[in-house]
Length: 514
Image (cartoon, rainbow, N blue to C red; front, side, top):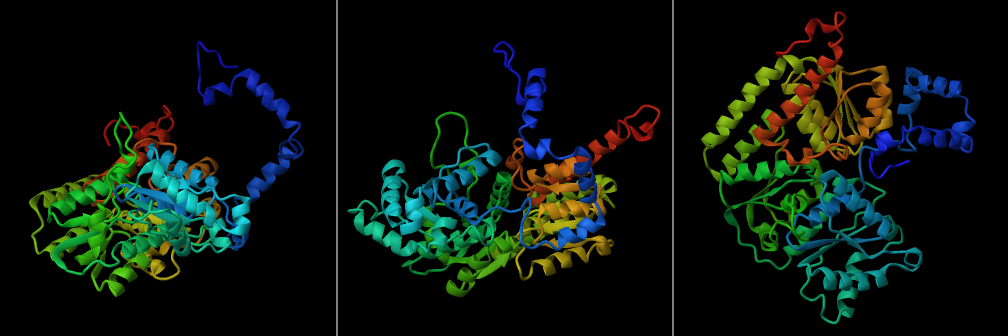
């Protein structure tokens, strides 16, 4: 067992003879492990790698295995933490909010403030009004927020709790305690959509509710930027840096960078975020740019139809994506592209030329959110790579596949590229066995695929639990393009070294200069 003089981690601990003996004895009590013939397991596993199984697997509709998406309230929590002095409040069970907090905390390696009103069995039967009345007052008393952003979980949605009515009721009984607290709210049922749907619902509701009663006076220099569900804090920083070059009135709406990038020392509950005053006056901007078209579908309708505001979408990942964003800022502000940005672009183009021979014609499987995939696939095509399998579990029903097809049409190998909308990672497993690729790009859940298929996994996306500090980098802008280029190219070179390291067998290209 453990020795206090020599503490070892779990990886080495459970290889010790005493633990191996415990495991061996334990198996005789586990029917699944002890009663199944190993030969039969091996036979079925081999069959799951076949074309026959692939056809059956791709026809599956009634169940999800290893999803490549999360649920709506997760996105709502990210929106809330993008505004100053705001506490995310989940109307649902304590277990749900614990999941959201741990999910973000494992990715960002930072605390994630969020509360719930801990609905239990009785609330599931009689409704959660009493929970909300107590919960909002307790949240205000304990954490002193300027704004409480309320979202829902499955339990509250199944029984039909009305957030607007509940919040009005809670205010009436709060004896003035909640009078000065902003409480935007959104219904975010976990059983439909995904985390990007929840982001959209919460952002739309927050902007609508904060702008109520605001006198509209358009500021010709004001531009809003909505980042979307962005797990790379470095991308937020990079976008703000680029925007700053074009003017001081370009404001990010939903800026969660500082919340998950606090320093050592005394912990601050509320860190950074868009100022409430800026959020209230977002209606007065001359234009709004969304960096994630499919994370802001409903928000776009509010901005275009209710606010009558100019609305643009840009996806600043890769060379052409960043070019489009920079040129849009130049168009909207009437300012020339700064020399600094031109130099950054030139450095990216130079780096792409250096790495092109290694990425050219490499086959990739990639999965993730709709907008992430549009940007990443565009970058792969720019580098002459072949995005053989593009899997988007939470792909929107309209528009996304056409947008992706337009990007693929720019590739000379477009016929070899496949779009898999609505499929999960168990579907992808079948695709990888029957139509293998050279590399995978995706989140931590591709780890099992790597173990099964032996195809190298390049970790880009959300969530990433098993590597540290990747979220601190940018994948957006010209600087972000160099980061992507570095990660992907060096992963290819790492694999090349592994394939050529055997002395006098495979080491014909085991070079020190690449």
